[in-house]
Amino acid sequence: MVRAFKLFVAYGIVFLVGYLGTGITLHYVKPEMRILPQFVENILDGGAIWKVQYPEESDVSMFDQRTYNPEGHDPEEEILFTDDYNSENGIFCFRGNAQRNAPTRGILKGKPKDIRLDWEFITGYDGRTTEYGSWGGGSGWTGQPLVIKWPKKIAKRLHGIEETYVNQANFREVIVGSLCGDIYFIDWKTGKATRPHVTIGNPIKGTVSVDPRMNGLLYVGQGIKNGDRFGSYIFNLFTGEEIFFRNGLDPKARRAWGAFDSNSLVDAETGYWFHPAENGQIYKTKIASGKAIPEPFIFNYRISKHPDLGIESSFGAWNNLGWFGDNGGNVFCMNLMTMKPVWYLDNYDDTDASMVIDLQEENHPYLYTGNEVDKQGETGTAHIRKIDGLTGKEIWDVSRKSTNTKLNGRVNSGGVLASVLPGKKKANKLVYGIFSRINGTLAGEFVAIDKVTGKEKFSIPMDYYSWASPIDLYDKAGNCYIFFTDVYGTIYLIDGLNGEIIVKRKTDCVWESSPVAWGNRIVVGSRGKKIVSFVIN
Image 1 (tube, one colour):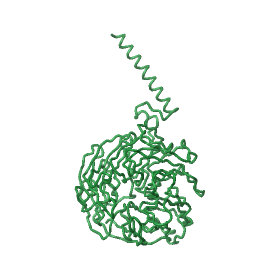
Image 2 (cartoon, one colour; image 1 turned 45 degrees about the vertical axis):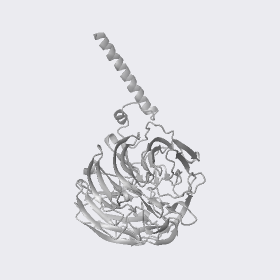
Image 3 (cartoon, helix red, strand yellow; image 1 turned 90 degrees about the vertical axis):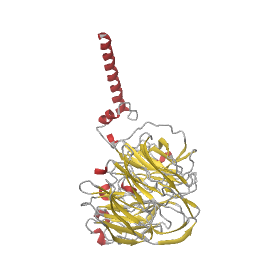
Image 4 (cartoon, helix red, strand yellow; image 1 turned 120 degrees about the horizontal axis):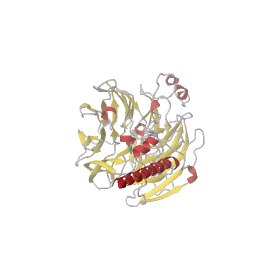
């Protein structure tokens, strides 16, 4: 018996040494092959969060995929989207970073007591009638403003900017695309124009992006065709000129619709610009400052089970992984270096809410997303889901019955269109979301959910539905406050820990756009002709 035990121990040691030795060797020689427990791999990585990921690929045979222009990218060039999307200098993209989870900057001095309207900026108005109605001005879904704190040496290069703003201490500029087709530049404090607007002459529904390298490049996606062109654009803010147009009516695409509502991202180190399109393609373009825009690498796909093409949601990215959701209800993870799918998930219905990434235990990425009620019929089920970002496995699901309506003969969806919001600081155990048109009504419901268990902590009935994403604000003690809106003009400010309503007020605006905040100032666009700023007292 003693001899057998000794042999067992000896063989165990040999196996353990061989296993560890093989695993350690593979970790450094062939990092995509990982056989050790995750905590051991993390130790070998030195605890690094921002590193190339090699998740195990699951079945992706459902993709009918094509690629074009392989020389347009280097699949071995490392791409690392961190949580710093030039955060110190402002909000450069939809929801503030590549993980789509940071729509605010700064802190509040204490618990909010009230909100007051501080300024209004009036946009142009486009009264032309299109096949899809008249779009007017102001901003729509997603329509989030950006706010950039320009260093003086860069601010003085901005085309047409007034000298007053160049010399202004702590100068911040709001940049927002309008349904009238213009992109406006507004002083954060006063609401006055800082320089002449630029225009694409067609409605902009989504959120524009500013290159986080602060090289003067502005990326704009068109929402509706109302002229000869239909696609995406790049402007040089140092010259005020449009320098690039991409035709969304691409003959290679499998859908003849040229909109780009999805918000694009740029990897600051490599210069790769990623822009999903509603024609069923994802464009990856290498952009070097001051040089001509080259031909992109194109990923083109269709999934037979849910063949409706078009990515309207804004994709989330973490390190070299990207998460996408489309009009068919297909959600998938992709390696942004190789541009190959990693896993696939059926998300039940049209998915326009952003792909939101939240790092939790051992810096493991989790995906939050939701679905609309569109293709299910007039009535269906909307879900807010937590998904393992590396495997695509569902962790939990919170749902509501929801309905859609017809508007000008087309489906006006219910369900989840607002981006899910992970809490931070004292609210780091909660995640927030909004359901629209619940239980056969036009009402909405704001919900706070435990990140780990998926149990609802509290909910707030909303007078009407909302497509606009909520934002989180924090005081010095780390207490959380949430600001959100509904489509018929109500603004809400609540305590994010217990659901106490601090402010609920009706305004004369129609809110579809998502807000941003810096400190106690909020800026948000409305349908019609207004971009407005509220100040929290």
